Length: 404
Image 1: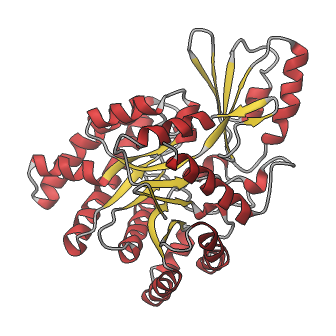
Image 2: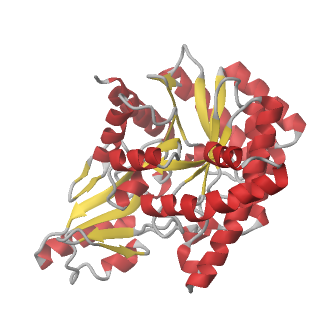
């Protein structure tokens, strides 16, 4: 739905199901009800998540035709997609496998191109379309710098091949599509500095040469195409985890000529660590239910001098809770965005509010997507039915977007 000139929706990775049949059934079950409550008199945008399995089916002409007909009947449209999780995302251990296959592989490239071919068919005219994706790979899969460099080289080659495809799609359809890289803790790209360095040291020099050779483009046009079709996905939770302020990130990207393709509205857990052992044990009891086995819950702590320390998962951080000298923890757990306080712990909701305030006077992106996907693994007492959850989150965002 269009709110204050922005396309706002939620990511359908909230719904379990990897096949296209399951995905479509969820859309038919929830979208009409949510639209009726939130946008009865306007078109409703969808942030579509397709697994590789689902994308292979939807790519078939008869399936695409049927889905397009359903979208028209519902007065709904797809403007963004989540291409980060390739395979199973619910009801199984995901952890670092969320990056599998990574950007070093042809499988990741081909899956992403297939998603873009689908999006090009679904996207209404006069609207740009974006797909968010993994920050290349999971950094701990590479034990040495030379291995990491090879991974970045392979990943860059595949990304540039996607750019070539997006150039072709634009020439044929007139539609601008962009791949939105989503930094997150322990990804190869996890913060602003690493994103800027990737563009400067890898993507632009390698990509420019490749496009000049394969498409006979000028250097200027090749660089322009890369920056047009490869953008940043700003996940509010992820950047809050690394203690970066929204305004600083947006201004740094703008100065480098890197566009923001999509903002994923999400919140992490945060807490100030008490000094006393008894208080820390109470904090541990509060956090234990969040140390669940499905997703990675990286923890990034900050000490009194502002230095950061990372833990690969919450269970590892909890083992050091009694002895750590860190003063604050932030935990990668996408909690409901409409709450700021969970008793002994809080959320990074204030970062979302900073983003929404910044958007009122700065043109950053037109694509906003709420991405709370953890409803089925939230601790007892924090859950509600999915439909009510989605409506409450989108309503909270809408209300804050409209405030002067």
